[in-house]
Each structure stands twice: as structure tokens, then as C-alpha cells.
Image 1 (cartoon, rainbow, N blue to C red):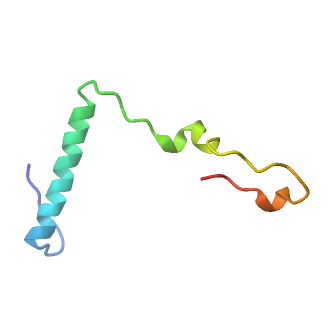
Image 2: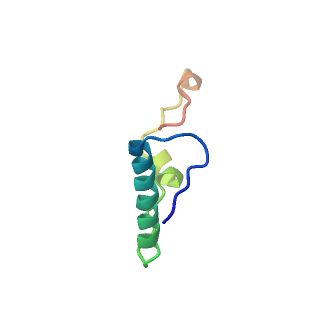
Image 3: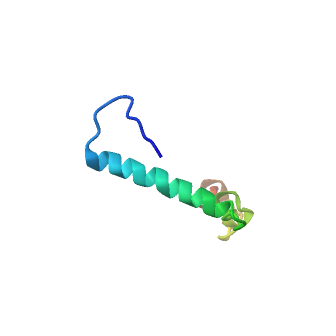
Length: 69
């Protein structure tokens, strides 16, 4: 693997940190490509929205309207 710094002057520590991130990403992509199931995306999970009970309707329920997070 070859990395070329196009702009700036990174310190050896910054360059090592960037290389570690690139290598970790490459390792995770190669592990996912080996037949391992992709991790579930919890952000798009419909159960995330319905996890908590919604406020009961009533005369002031408009003030309690929100998306539970």
C-alpha cells in the first residue's frame, strides 16, 4: 500500500493514525466480503421508534408530541 501526501505536512503520528484507519477499514471490508452477514442498521429499524410508549391522548397531548429517540 502506498500513501502520498498531496497537501500539508503531517507529523509521523498523524500519518500513522491515518494509515491505521485505512488499514482497519480495508480489513473490515475484506471480512464482510468473506460471507459474514452485514451488521444490522439500527437507525432504520422500525422497532427503534416504537421502543417507548407514546404519550396518552388528552387535552394537552399536543404539547407532548415528539419522536422518541
